Image (cartoon, rainbow, N blue to C red; front, side, top):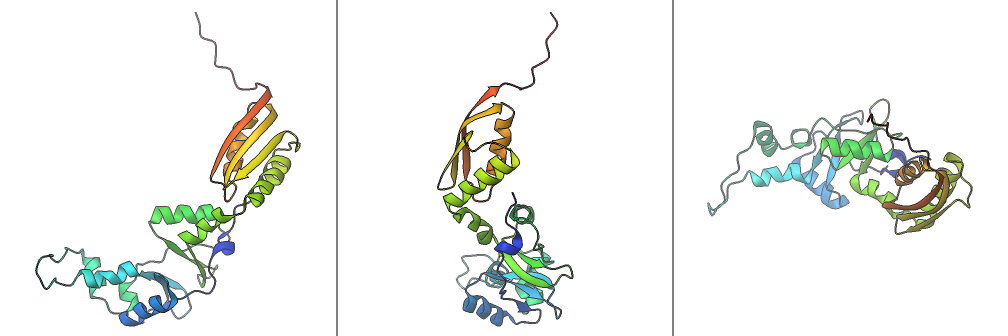
Length: 225
């Protein structure tokens, strides 16, 4: 049982910008390819950073309002440098936060969350660009068919991992919501089964109605009287 990898989910035909690409050419590149950001690469195709619509909009935000109703916002020094930049290397957010192709979708999602980014350039062992993975790419796993999710839970989780007979646990999946019913030998197996089912790609929620034949839960220590 394995999560989908970044290599399986990433976009391989990457729209990218050279470090000296002018501002207007970056805007055109985004518009022509219907993307909101592109990695900026050096001559060896190694990502230096990412330039996004948000980076470019700093130039507009830095302009004075002719009516005088909206004051020019205060910008930190690094924000001011971006607002005044004219080439990709001056406008980009750097350094590039990158992923490896063999990472799981969970590792990529956690890095995005920790670094507050929406996409990760994917690089090989020499740091050359292989692809790009976005939040939308990671969310695609939730489009998995219910039958595929049920088969993975039945075969990989219950039969191969937990060594349970098919007759012991019934699995129903509707719109990614998993319902488990049946009976297992030990009470301690129930939370393990639930946790493993939640880890299957595409699962939205898990509810269980599992009985057990033996209560092997640890007993609280007896208190002295």
